[in-house]
Length: 290
Image (cartoon, rainbow, N blue to C red; front, side):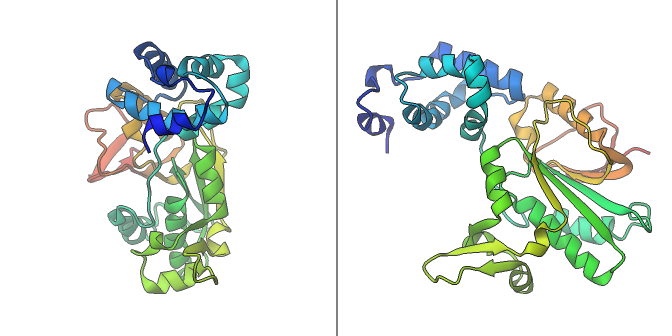
């Protein structure tokens, strides 16, 4: 459906004003960068226009300028900011996405006695967890390791900037096709199929949620966790930031990582040339300097 057909359904919306002007785009993109560190280049103007149209209709506004002024107001900062974030951010993820990371976690990290010391809880952070597939995959790997190592204790923290994605993660209900790449034995053990044949959905087993905490976090904020992490996943998050902001964000993340702990980024991302307390282990896998 194109923007004109959408607008025709809203008689209060002036079709001639239904374009995101260069000034409004510039103002909004500056706001996005200042608040969240997300770079919105001119090439994304049409995308942003399309995504904001639905929200403008819901609010019964008549132009992008009106929406911008509302967003920048005190009321908008209190009431609209999370809705705006849900519209702006792109969230695409799958179970066992980039499987080499989970193989490394299982084969190299978990058996490492320097990381997993007797009596200590293994802590892992999924930073930018989106709709939850990543932390639930991590939970599968850790639960499988626990099966063979009963004394192993773990805790998973998962955070995201989108309240909409966090709602999905908390519910743990997904399209059945999301687990097509999951081994059959794990499907049976960790996922529940809907009993309704017409409802092609699955729900994560409660065991995957037992040691998992999901919460909101803006990586641009000042934050601190009560305990350092043994492993941090920050995959396909850096792509939203420019180079300067990437380094700032990762440096802050590294303050929450134990010396000797592991840091994972997405395969389309690079931190080469940045001044960070990390040593390269394998492509997209790093370890914090002791």
